[in-house]
Image (cartoon, rainbow over all chains, first blue to last red; front, side, top):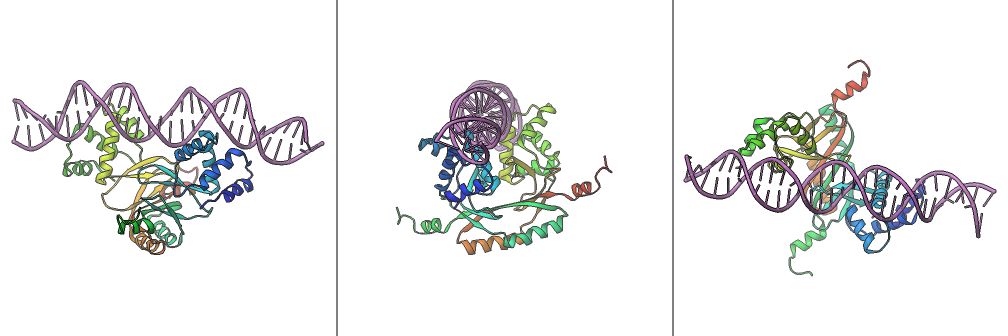
Amino acid sequence: MGDLTSIVTALDVAGYRLTEPRRSVAALIADQDGHFTAAELVRDARARQLGVGRATIFRTLEVLEDLGAVERLDLPSGEHAYVGCEPAHHHHVVCSRCGRTDEIDDEGLRAVVADVARRTGYRVDDHRLELFGLCPACLDRAATPATTA
Amino acid sequence: MGDLTSIVTALDVAGYRLTEPRRSVAALIADQDGHFTAAELVRDARARQLGVGRATIFRTLEVLEDLGAVERLDLPSGEHAYVGCEPAHHHHVVCSRCGRTDEIDDEGLRAVVADVARRTGYRVDDHRLELFGLCPACLDRAATPATTA
DNA sequence: GGCTGCGTTGAGACTCAGTCTCACTTGTGG
DNA sequence: CCACAAGTGAGACTGAGTCTCAACGCAGCC
C-alpha cells in the first residue's frame, strides 16, 4: 500500500519538486504497516537520522493528502492517523488491534447516500465511512490464544 | 435536539450527581443550533458568566458522550465537534454552511457493513458514517442569492 | 557544466485542544 | 443536619499542528 515510487511519481506529475526530504517522507510512509500518525513519522525520521524537520513532515502529508496518495482517518480515540492508498475515492476497514487497513469500494454506499439525500432534502457533497474491527489475522490469533508467539 | 431535561435526566438515571455546573453545561448544549466544539461551549460559558471551568466542560462532554446524549463528529477540517442527540446508534448529515445536523438511521448501511465483512474477512465491530453537504435551507438560500437578508 | 530564481526546508517560537493535579466545594444518603 | 465521596476550578502541563524567516537546493536555462 502506497509504495515509494507511486508516491514519488504522484508528486512529480502534480508538478511538485522531488526533493530529498520528500523522498525520505515517501520512504517512511512506504515502510509503514497499517495506519500511522504524523508523530510516528517524526519519530521514525529522527530514529533513522534522516534530518527531516517536523514541519516538513506535516507539510508533505498535507500535499500527499491533497494528491490522494495518503488518506486521513479519524480513529475512535480521536487521533488523526493516515494510510497510504490509491488515489481514488474509497473507504477503509481498520483493524483496532494491529492497525492494518484495507480499502473498500463505494459500491453499496452510493445507494445509501442517495437515499439519505432524498429523505432529508440535503445535497450531499461528501461523505466519510470508516469501519473498525478485527482483521482476519487478528481474529485467528484471538481464536487460538497462546499457541503463537 | 438534545434538550435540557433529557440531558439532565440521562445524567440522573446513570447515577451521576446533578450539580450546578453540569446543569449549566446541559443548558449550553441545549441552546446550540448545529454542531458545536468544546471551545465554543467554553466561550459561551464565559460570556454568560456561568463560572464553569474549562476542565468541567471537557469532563461533562466526556460523560455525555459515554451516555450517548452527545455524539462526537470529526469535521473534514479535522476539528472535533459535538452534536446533542438521542441515545441510539445512528449517523449524521452535516450542513457545511450553517452547521445544522440531522440524524439518519442505520437502515441501508447495515447491509453494506455486512457485505464488507464478508468480502474482507474482518469482524466489523464499529463503524462511523458522516455525510457533508448543504441542508435544504442553505440550498434555498444559495438558489436565490441576494433576495434574503 | 554552472547560474539563478523560486519552491522548499529546518529550527524553533507559537497557538490551541485536551489532560492532569490538587486543594476546595457541594450534592446526597443516612 | 452531617459526613464523605463525587465533583469542581485554577492553572500547570503536554503534545499536535501552524507559522515565520533566513538559508538551501531543485530544475530549467544557457
